[in-house]
Structures are given as structure tokens and as C-alpha cells.
Image (cartoon, rainbow, N blue to C red):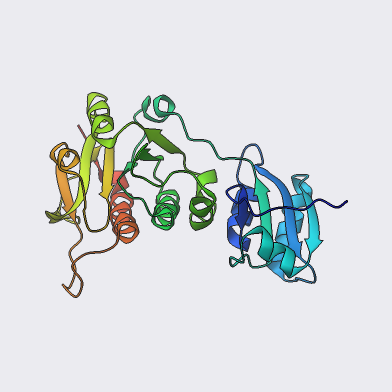
Length: 252
């Protein structure tokens, strides 16, 4: 009897770009098996096949109905992969050498937002994304999909709570910058290194204790057409500012 994959889903990654990123990531390959839409063609599929063969990943051509069933009719673009669980990174390994910048997420529960933030973190060179154990989206298939393979490039570390993590970082010499509309414009604020940036949930923002433990607050000025950016957009803008000034950050 042929193998039938049931829609469990957190171990399925789908979409051409996310799967390509996971296949091409350095280190041990986390892709265990690949399912491709019968008759699909194009450079993206050719690259998927090349990488699958190079990394000795089993692949199978299947009908669209099979792929739809596996991922509950999500937009799989003709590609579904079964991946090994991406485990959380290690806190001590992340901070022992003063890795910078770090990104902390304070109460962001939408997995799509967390995935998008991970993608920006990888793009702008953040060394790690730190999330709390409670009231936060954790590792899941949705986060993996939304991150477009970023979890293979930047570690996600889970801590008991963000407020305590900030104290631990301060003891290690980190400067803490919080994203908040009441802060100074990001382009004019003095940035010191090593640094950690904290992003709060859309609407509620940073928790009071987290906000109090920041060394400075960074704002993203706008036209006023909307009250604020969502969390993933704010993270991207502020990470870009940090990346832009990476060579000129003050060492304190």
C-alpha cells in the first residue's frame, strides 16, 4: 500500500522559495522528502531537483489533489517538503561572544508576523531572534513558511520572559533599544554596540517593564496617514537602520 501523508502539518514546508532556501542552507539538510507537482516545469523546479539530488533527498511527482490534502489547500506552488523539526537555538551560545545585533520579540503572537520578522532578521544580518515562552508564536510550520527559509540562517531562541532576558543582556554589556512611537527618530538616535532591539506587539506595544529596561526608544517617523506600522514592518525598518550604520556603531 502506498505511503499516504496526512495533513499534520507543522513538519511540512511548502512553496518554491522556502523549500529552495531550506535545501540550500549550510549544515545538515533538514529536508527529508520532497513532493512535486506532476508536469511542473521551469527554472525553479530544475533547481529544486538539482539540490534534492545533490543532497540525496528523496522526491516524488504527485497530483495536485495530493499536495492540497497535505497542506490543507494552502498555496504550495507545486512544492511540499517534509522537514526535520527546527529546534530552538541555545541562549548561551548566542550571547557568549557578544553577538550583535540581537532581536527580541515582546508578545508577538501572530506566526505570520514572526515569520516575516525572521526573514528581515536574516536579510539584515541579525545574529538571533529571541522570543518568550508564553504569549508568543513559537516554532511552527506557519512560522517556517512565512520566514521563507530564514530559520535555516538565523537561530530562534526561547527564554522564560523578555524582561529577564534584557537584564541578562545588560550584564553582558548589551545596549537595549526598544521600538516605540514615543522614542527618538531612528535616524538620529545614537547606537552603541553590542546592541539588542526589542519589538512589541502591534497595538499594545512593549510591556511596561520591558520598556523601562530599554536604554533608549526608537521611533519610525511617518506621514501620519496611519498611527503606526505593524510589528514586522517596524522591525524591518529599524533593522535596516542598524545595518546601514553597522560600521559606525559606537563601542562602549
